[in-house]
Amino acid sequence: MGIIEVNSISYEYNAAKDISIAPALKDVSLSIEQGEFLCIVGHNGSGKSTLAKHLNGLLQPTSGNVLVKGMDTKDEQRSLEIKKTVGICFQNPDNQIVTTIVEDDVAFAPENLGIEPKEIRLRVNMALKAVGMESYATSAPHMLSGGQKQRIAIAGLLAMQPEVLVLDEATSMLDPAGKAEVLSIVQRLNSEGITIVMITQYMEEATIADRVIVMADGEIALQGTPKQVFSQAAALRGLRLDVPAVVDLRNRLIAKGMRPTHALNAKDFANFIAEALGVTNGD
Image (cartoon, rainbow, N blue to C red; front, side, top):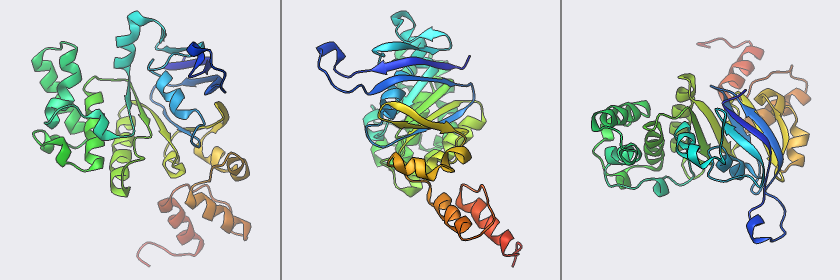
């Protein structure tokens, strides 16, 4: 059993009002393994963010259930424990910062849980160090860049010591430098054992995951390793998605007669081209 089990869930935003609209999720099932880096992609309205909000009980399925370490997200008595296990970082970092000093913001959630001050200090220091922001502990969040703010938001979640970190479009409002900062932090956290679920529209970001799930019209349309998913360029375009730019270039060159390669990022592809041309380091 995975750390999160999604069992045949469907969700309708207006179900309580008895308004007939298309379900946002339709009979979705998946298992998320401890320590996995899972990326969920899809166009706007595909259901990926709705699915993300089910992973720690922010939304409750209309049918089916979600289990977090065996705890049903519908069980109100386990709600706090579930939210401590699965933390969610959202799109806009400004909406997640609630104080005027960085270290106070990171300490906010543990303080509200009544954790001992000495333990809070240890957690705040650990969390800021984990995201490379310890030197900004006494800074004002509004003076930081977008990428730095999002790193502070992640630190606030880490202070809760979650086992799973869900990033719901967490890089979509950041410039390229900010995106790189956050993705680097996320990869390192995953290497240290935290399960990552990343929701994104940017296909390049999905290349760093262990597994990719493609959502369309509230259902899982494709899933597999990045190599498996991005090899299905025609299917992705049929779902109104593109393959990453490097993969598209790779496929075009293969169509022109270049031998196949599974390179998914610019560095690996550059090395492949260099090898194909007989260029060695230093040439």
